[in-house]
Length: 374
Image 1 (cartoon, rainbow, N blue to C red):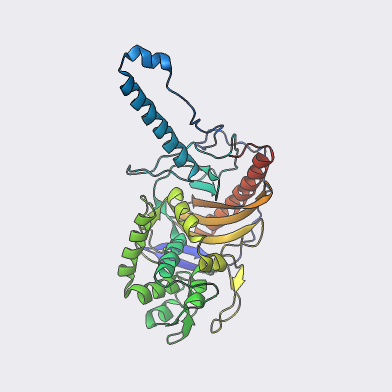
Image 2 (tube, rainbow, N blue to C red):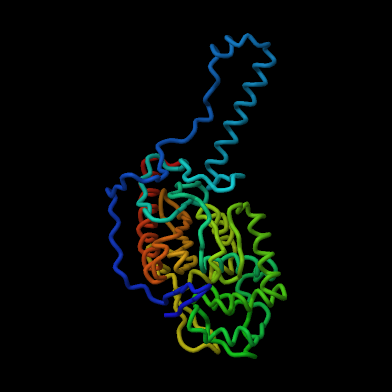
């Protein structure tokens, strides 16, 4: 086990998760919640009642223009509903969104924190909980990897340039207060190897090393992270560090889902986060993925996070076989058991996410089998 302390707060990234996971129960109910399942989609064929138009006694050209504007507005709403998320210019995102590509979907949402799920190629399965910014801990490293690869792309199985471990990264590797990868000053690793050491065992020191290598300083790199978030429409996200150690790095499940959709189209990230473990020459032993869901129940990534202020956080990706094809389901679950110890938060987010993943897979298969999925 390794731990992270930020401002007197302890963060833990566990290499093993052996807590018992309850079986998914399709009849499970959650009374008194603000879940966002729904029973239908907007009907873009709705027309303005002609009787109402006649009562206005407006000229024909005015009513024609009005009808066109109504039709355009309805089409725009339908496009937003099926895109997987809806943007907002308000100070905080809506508490819930009542959009779903599946009618009467009853997903086993976590009752703590906030969650969001989407199916690539179909759209949103809805959200759960208040979508206000919360600490995201080491889920931050997904944006770090995204920015690094935007500046230094890796094609196919390319390893990238060699990067030298500096004194700061070496000294931080022995910190008992944060999750790190054990490296020595002067060692040289490829860009891909360092991305593995950052994303798989969640090495905070490696995240900061990559930030300095890319931008000259961590502050300069954080500016790039926030610029990338703005470009992706992550309007409720603020990055203050490359590792996620800082509790001031905050976001929402809906915002992080936008990032998940983007990074799962990057071959380098996708191949790394799908590994249950790895070995890196120069680093002792087998390096285990903190996301212990990888490799079972169709899970193929992405990234864990845990700290006292963040609780447990998980950005996840899973395949689902339904309707004669394989679908990619993406989800983000944040703020699980926040305020408790990091291990309890991580256990909770892994358990709750696994239940949600299995529920989403079953609901999607059932809906497509009965022709209910859009």
